[in-house]
Length: 465
Length: 60
Image 1 (cartoon, rainbow over the protein chains, first blue to last red):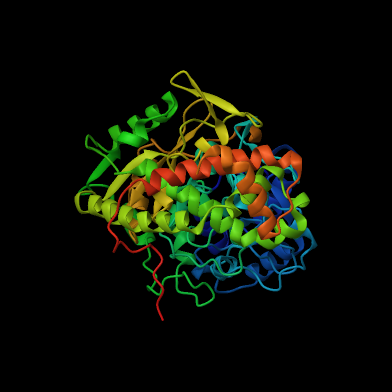
Image 2: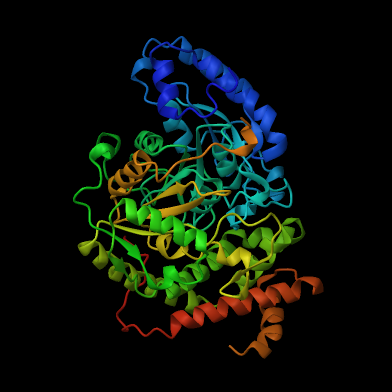
């Protein structure tokens, strides 16, 4: 039993539970057993909500309507910045441990459970989401399921590690500058960073309000679509959440990529890139018969502006904690936030002015193309604790450069499906970037790549076999 | 902002904001601030017209 469901997709699990082939209780017990067995190695979970999950599974098994639940019995877990009723929302910090337990689940947890999914716990993450590595000084690093000595990627590291390690088939994370796409790349799984404002952030701990997105991690493109569809819809509890009606993508993903105009991002996105990222882009471009290259204008400046907005909005969020509890932060986070608190507002406003200009330029590209391909990360997962890597013979710091290719995209809220290319020994991701509100395009391409075998969530070594 | 003035700026800024700053933290804070200011400079040197609006728009 333990191995039977480990690599199953959410779609396969839901079909089995809905048809009565298996019970939600059996699926949940199987996942809980695997979490128990693998968490000492992966350190992906900071809380396991076993009692709640068992009660929920029993309720599903007694539900005569479960055939109509698209995620019936699918175990999932969330980055520990999502509120879980009765659990303190850590956001990867020591400071928040003193805060009272959450009174109500985050909006997206409620929506996934309404679709039949079963929450099994909360995931380790980089402190206050200001991280690309998956390391955490309080809880220890979450680890890469393909090689435990390597990073999971941050800041949704535990979520990447858990889905990549087959502990759960579905997880939720947040992405401010790349925190869904980076762990997807390092852990070799699918991730969706939807359009800014598409999914409600209600009852989650923020980082940078004007850049924060939430989204799913899965082991298949179809599961990305199904979970995304279950979570769409307006929510007055998040002021940034769109009032657009849900636009389901699951019925569209099998349409293939015929007729879609696709280009590879050149210029900035080809500088500082490692051979494995070049190989991944080449494989994807070949499979999609893509020969066009497009220059995303001023991407380096866009990354710079995202950096300025991130550090200052983040510092504003944490100002009171910096004043009163500076000693309790991860020093690397604290020092960046203190610096951010000192940046003059004139510079922040300039970054916001540039942001609008840049958005207009990039949207013009989508008059010519439906999707643009770019690496998710410059390289495969570095080793945990690794401080530098060498690009074109030049030694560069690891931490700030991991998000080199994700930041200019989330800066203007574009939807991205991050697809895993199963290179050996470590996987790496490719971003399929679409125009705002065109998640369907990104997911059609992701699904087509998976069908062709170019994109795949490969079996993790931590699972054995 | 000249890098040589950053020490004074950091000292005055943290005191003004009521943020404690231990001696040992200063080099990292300075390094981070210098990076941010350098990146901000790359944004400000990109000239846009006076009527260019910032991305967030307030609606009453």
